Length: 230
Image (cartoon, rainbow, N blue to C red; front, side):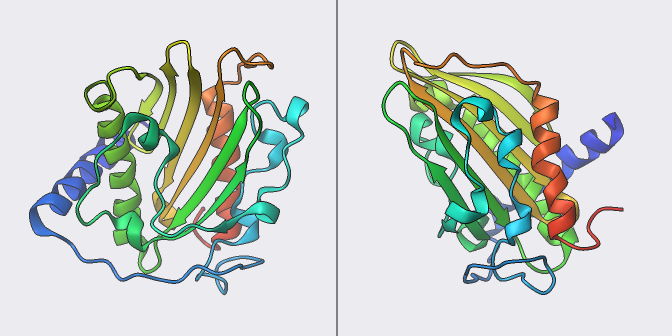
């Protein structure tokens, strides 16, 4: 596992650098509603790709809906933490051309909000997998720079591996966010799950291990993208 993570991180870093130096061009695609699995439904996020709502933190309180039922197409998706960190745009960001969908469950102040996104790059998984890993590496860099781009916001990484990130982001006295980002290079996919609330929160955060949440994010992808997990 350690060797795999080191190799994956090296690939991700190389691809991230290539975006800046070579200006790689990606072909855009349209995302539409798609039941079932990929193939044949590869031009949109399959319904089966979403994390089970019962596996999302605080599900016993909020009874989160099935995410496929509330998901919409996400054009040029960005991660929610980037709005808190005021992260600058990335030239040639391949997320602009990913097939992507977003599911959002908003709640009033003091209650927890939920956002999940699934991003998928079509084509060969060698290229798409590298892109997925590089997207996680770029997110890691953005979180590391958050204190510079948004001085009042303070992120704390709880998991930092080549293919996954988890963090708690605080805006002292104002709001707090829990972030989970996962890359699955075997199916060229990135998944985001994020929950946030204003402070004071009506419902106290109930700790769940990062590993448990990442497993719940990863498992549906193997079913949604046929032949990607062996």
